Length: 227
Image 1 (cartoon, rainbow, N blue to C red):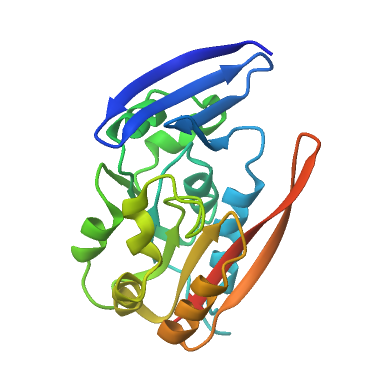
Image 2: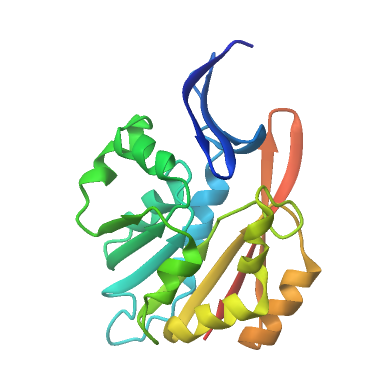
C-alpha cells in the first residue's frame, strides 16, 4: 500500500510524521511508532464520552453545565471533537507537547473536524500537560482526560511515565471540583495504573473497548477516578 508523507517535523523528542495511506486514512507516527489514525477513532471518542457520562447530574440542574475540561494530548483531534459535541461544556483546554501537531490540526488536515477550529470554547497550549495543570487552581476543573501516550507499559516517550505516577495523579485530583473525573486511556490493561488510581481516588473504574485494526482484534482500556 502506497503511503504519502503529508508533513514531517524533527522535535526535541524525535521525528513526528503525518502520513496519508492510499485509502485516504491519515496516520500519526512518532519515531516510527504508530500513535493513531483517522480510521479507528472509537477509543478516542469513547474516552471523552464515557468520562462525560460519568459526571454526576443532579435532578434539578445538570452538573455538567459550564463544565471545564482539560485534555492531555491533542493527537488528530477526535477526543476534543467528542468533548465539543457536549453543549454543556463551557471550556476546553488542550495540552499538546508537539507544536507541529497543533499546527496540523489548525490547518484543517482532518477535514471532518474543521468546524472545531472556530469553536471559541477551545484553548490550545503547546506545552506539557504537567505545566498546564500546574497553572490551574484547586477545584477549577470538572474533567481531566489523559491520552498523552499509549499507556504506562507502551510509552512512546519515557518522560511521560510521570503522568501515570501518584504525584501527578494527586495533582489532578486536587484540581477537580467535587464529583470531577480523571480519565486515562491505555493501550493495554495495567494493574499498576489501576492500583495507583485506587490509592489516589479511593476507587477506580476500568472500561474495556474492543477494537478491530484490520484483521487484528484487540482491546483498549479507560481508567476513571472520581474526586
